[in-house]
Image: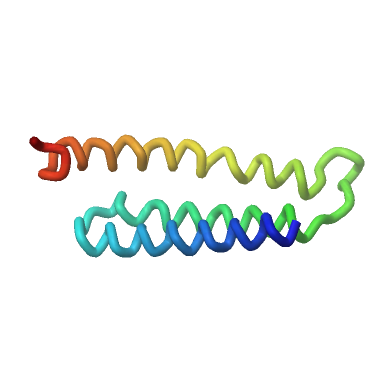
Length: 95
């Protein structure tokens, strides 16, 4: 578990760095989305790490963790589309 947490922290730091540098370069609001998604995931991850027993035998921390990852998945997909459109419209992919 400690190795998973360490790799997750490293990945979150890298995506946050990417988000800041990409936003500074493009000055487009969607370029900051990865950093905001990372913040959301970190908050949802606290449910996984700080486990609590089920409430009324129905809802527990793990189920709320899964619920908390639905929004960032859709948001991440929208970021990937915007980022790909930016790449296709820019100089980077032109021959």
